[in-house]
Amino acid sequence: MRCSYCGCKEDKVVDSRSIQENRAIRRRRECLKCGKRFTTYEYIEEPSLMVIKRDGQRQPFDRKKILSGIMKACEKRPISIDKMEEIVIQVERLLQKKAAREVPSTKIGELVMDKLKSLDDVAYVRFASVYRQFRDVEQFMLELKDMLNKEKRKGRKIKK
Image (cartoon, rainbow, N blue to C red; front, side, top):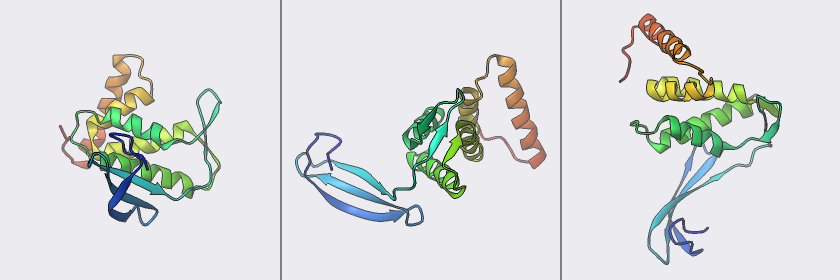
């Protein structure tokens, strides 16, 4: 493993624990050269999954792309990276349970939005505005009104 700070290949494992229902291992490592700590994850390699993009192109599933989108939506929000990572894990697990080798990108986006909606309203709206490609303020307002109406029917207060 290479240190993310200095690039040294020598490290020691400080802590190791099973996560995600024993489907992955989280390891805290300490670089033997600079002494800084960093985290690595080991995942069970699942059968490859292809994503069908809106334009019909097929690409291998990349969890980093999903995490990147979630991180942008959650920027400056009180959401830990662990929560964001958990969303990616949940989405990935749902897709693998379906046993389909190909999945439309729209399905992935919907799953992410469902998870973000229950986590943080602002992050959800940010993600939805990019994912649904809102073209004007009117589309954006319709989404917000729909969200507010659903919250009122549930009797919940909107998180600010």
